Image 1 (cartoon, one colour):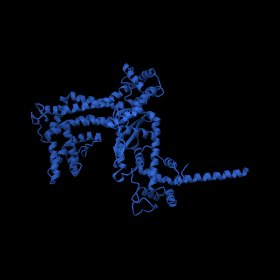
Image 2: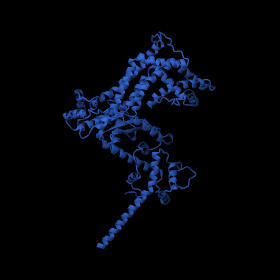
Image 3: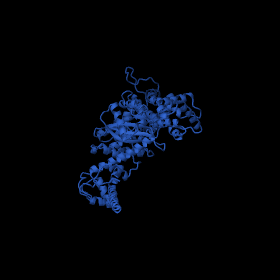
Image 4: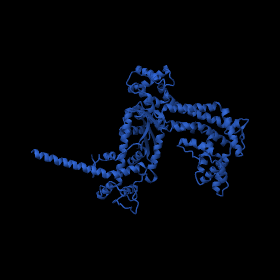
Length: 609
């Protein structure tokens, strides 16, 4: 009996060993196929399938194009991949694993693997903010781009894209349900939700029925922050409603559009002849969504003003009636004193606001630092307003030099006392007129918009300011009162008494007396979690609070590269898989990870471990 049992055990072990060997062999055979799909996703080769991507696989190049995927497999075989060659030769027609449906399954598996890694990172952070924005794709589907902002284990701020989620109900309640349900499905622990970042649309930011209101009723710690980049862009847009500035921007847009077509070569030649030292080679268009480009467009136009005038003068003499007529109209508009004054005033203000606009596009910007920069911009603009006479006198001297170069008569427009909609400002000189008509109204409008747009941000940040000392002094009574306000809001998160939190604040001030942090990120990095658990938790929340949703806007660019007019029937699963492969190139995804995900479903080739 003992000998029989031993023989039986030996047979079972042999069967198990043979099964494991066959599984390992199957995984090796599928590895080149998965590698090829990952390569296509990483490199943005979204057109995997060809016109005739079906039927038996041919090792020689077929007469008809069978797509990038099969061509890459063919290249791997010709390069000496024996495992792939053996698989394609010996596998049955129903088990080659190169069909379009299998390609989609591999992409979906990549999506699940990367999403699982992101979920683990965010849940380990213990605090995160949701960032969301909505747009319509080329097939007419409303797509929600979901991102999360959190601090990783190395104390770096990250804003990671999760998924595109289709929505049908675009009301505040409907969008809030999509966000909450999606985060739960992804595996997020919503008890760690500390903030919400959206644009200023009513459905998102409404105080009663907006997305932020519905989510905050369920998760009261999820503080809403209006996107800082949107706020600055709205301030710029509203300030440009001043009549002479509005007309200048319209003319500038027409000129930039004019030089994007057939006359581009003429413009480049004028730049080489008149401004050879200039780094700009062409005009930039006034893009409505790329806000920094709006600043660049004004500054570049002013730098290339002489080549623009020269080129328009040349084109206005062409035989092409339509083109020459348009060039003459634009030339007359450019040579107006009002246009030259407005473009110089715009460039002066935009030169000050452009650094903030660029910084607001960065992910590693914390709310404390962003508000401080905005306050500095407000101070700079206010100084331009207080010293309006001196500032504009210097600017007007530059404008007069430009007018003399182009033989333009700088004069005051004709007054018409009975016309109520004309610029009938009493003035003795052109300088006085344009200072009162262009410079002061625009600066006043821009300053007013900045103050209105930043009010909510300042109010939100007021209580958090006590966490970052402005000097080496002890915390003031106001600082301790602000901390008490924070304690009331986050009492169930801090797990300590109010008196203990105030005492920890005093000790924290003594700890950073010799090296005062400049922003919230530096403060968080310097704060020991064991020694200062309350201060560390509050600083963690402050750094996690959103500043901008610019990263969500960037994900739409990826979506438009993936879902094109020729591929507008792409499924959500395939779209998200390819998007994650492209966006999260820093996340290493191995063939083994994908095989393990595919093995969760029964298949013709057994690939279970």
